Amino acid sequence: MGNLITKEILKVYWNNVCGEVAGQSFYIFSNDISFLSNKFPFELWPSHKEAKNYKLFGDHWVVWVWDVKFSTIPINWLNIVKQTFLFFLENKAILSWCRVNL
Image: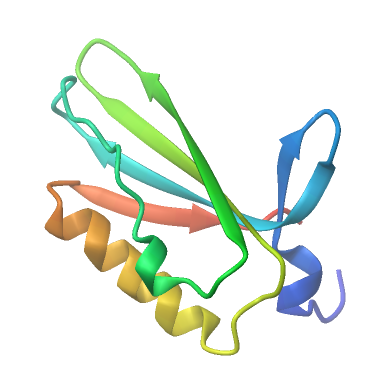
């Protein structure tokens, strides 16, 4: 695969008009099916960002997915990602992770 540059793999599918855009997906897991993740920590991220969420679930679990679209990757991206994880965990998530599209 060679050397990957972060800005080249931070992509998210946004919609059928924009297609793939600069962004990242965050996942928030709970074993409480009524768990609601309706807040995203916008204040941690620089301006010019959008986010949307959707829910995946089973009989005894729920995963909320937040797709975040940004115009530029923040210089302190890794720190912001860590703070975003902490925000979700402090708001009753059991586990939080993200992925990049390779």
